[in-house]
Length: 102
Picture 1 (cartoon, one colour):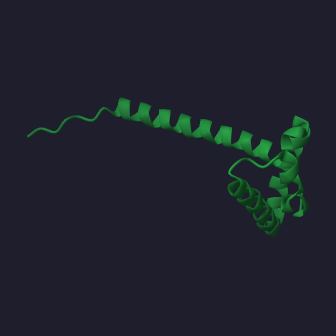
Picture 2 (cartoon, helix red, strand yellow):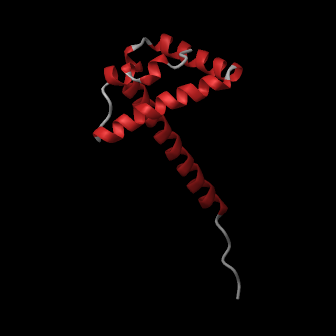
Picture 3 (cartoon, one colour):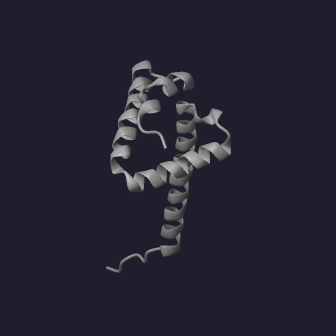
């Protein structure tokens, strides 16, 4: 019995579509994260600078990432308890704001 030939073009297109969807979901999630933390109140340049500083500090000081992670988990736990997104002022007042900011 002959095997059916694979349609590599269709498989490749399906993978590319899936990758595009995942990238789009990640972009939406990052935007939501910016809003939940209240970082959307910052000018874009300041937010970009803070993120670049955080990346640089994470390379020099891995323990800072541990502190940031703990603060971030607290934000998400607060969201889960309320069943909705934290207000930006509440998220900013949480543990994340005093855990080794960049």
